[in-house]
View (cartoon, helix red, strand yellow):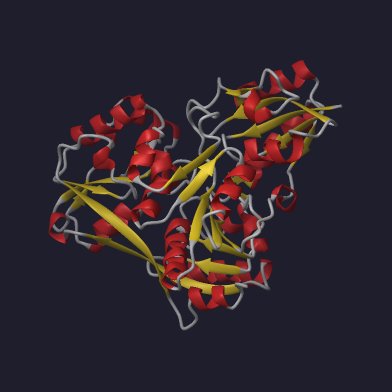
Length: 436
């Protein structure tokens, strides 16, 4: 029996265990390690999910203890199972594991994909923050207009009680309230639910897929970070970001998504420089020559432009896009530019507690406040950071209704961003040419 550690971040790691190792007597998984997401270590993958071979469950520990665990358990293989990591960093992890005498494994996506009885459209990306969710919403609206029932299966974000989060279904904001969803979960679920779509997520994706199939004619996979799909796609869509040219070839597993694409969408062409668009186009032509290439705009709007024009604005942006997505800004900055804000205030002097710690950990972040809310403490720190800022208007670039979760004492405006085709060939045409 070979001893395994799964290196993860509360998502792909659990899925890889369920599919590859849970019922396989040739392997014994001794631990999950956790990184990227605050406060997800110190838990246990419960026996109800781990199966009969693990009556005490499986501990989830910080990746900082990887060396200790490999030596303690004489681990044979460390399975790398999280996403949006530079190729260089992945190989540093591999070098450490190999130096400790263990194998380093990257599971092939095809071996971890579940098969569906329904057609599956997968929306993936090469980096966090490329604009997957607006593409997913566009596709679901397009299918609904044709009378086709859809269910969205979202990449996992189980940051709480894993047993309770095994299979989750969100059809209303109240469903998210009842599940005590974090800001990061709401950023991925809420905008779909607001448009009348049902989102499934959780831990055990075989059960999640069965629940979604019972309600839908077509499954739409809404990927997380730049991870590959958990469900085998009928159509694999990969979104690329010309604001980060070259990243489509230098981050794991985003390059895999590029190479797997049936349809490659270069997004944000309305805000990216032409040389960057040309560079990303060349990447698609070279490394995904069979993919159909489409161009798209990410259209940014606000409901009340007069609250932005000539004002000193505080930018509140999607947290993961700024942190491990490595963007210095997001949709709120674009809205500030479009609608003529007088200036963007520096959020750092007002940053409280864990928000200040986030700035210290991610020094690349520009004049934008990341909407971090993985815990009640972070949510309170976020509220204090916004209300302490010296600004006229708060521009909420996060896709959720943040005002439902915290008390914002400043005037605020929500920023909306949508997918828009750019070119004669539309995404709808490309999809229906391929959909059974």
